Image (cartoon, rainbow, N blue to C red; front, side, top):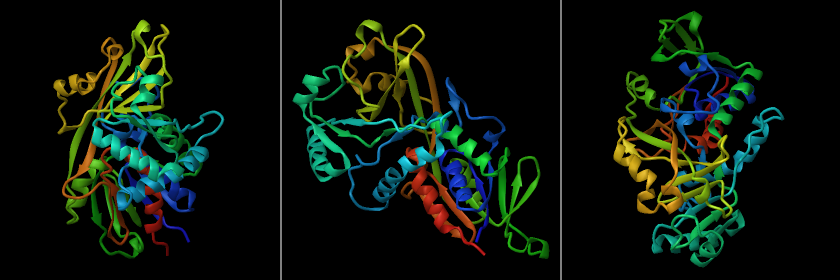
Length: 372
């Protein structure tokens, strides 16, 4: 049996849910203002509304220090699903690659000890601890390293722009209806013989109406007013993140092997290809700034790696700078995964882990869809 499902929000989570639902045989409509144009490819700059577009696509699943609870289960399940997602979404023209490994540098001696214990516990999952001596011998140009680092062969990143493009392509192939609109209101439909089985009415910014059988809300901060009018208070706050695209000075660029993602002082260093002049590029991000206004001081702290920046990083030149907003739930753990009413599902507020948790979220949403 199939259902008619309307998904609001076309970031990694919303588009991923729509794809997974369509694959399961449901009739799916995806609504988001961004659908009027293809996902950006290449250069990014300035403020970006979409958290997915602004993100670095970091996948930190198996290095998560907890070994129980919902947060761990979601991360673990997503890491199990990501290889399958990459294979099914990618094709010869547009391959989708999981870029690995990820290395997390310990900031303190205590954190280094925790990493050693975690590496021992999850050795079968590809975690190993790199000692201070190992880092000094093999990776002397990595920042930090005085207390060792955790190496994960399965964690890393996926290009979020390539992910959105691949999802959009598959949604079109699966005949998902794409509506480039903002939803301004969700209301319970008035009982009518013509609307049997469609209990929800969506008001669109163009003043149009859309009747829906089941609704999945994946619109991050925009979800709050939609749900509040229905009596569901799910407060979320914006947390701004700034990212720098750096060009390294040719003579001082690091020479040792570099992982897909190096995490130091909670900051991600993602090595990119070379510029036209042959100089190495590096992404640095992202800041954690409550609110919607960018703080120049936070950007300075980012560039200095909280005072840990090596000489080669200090000599880098800023090529691009962009920022985006994350939705962090207030007084509730992220993400918000709830069946609020029959036929009304919330899958939002992933904060910093929308790309990482997209597969597990989509799987959960599919399990909640009721069929007639």
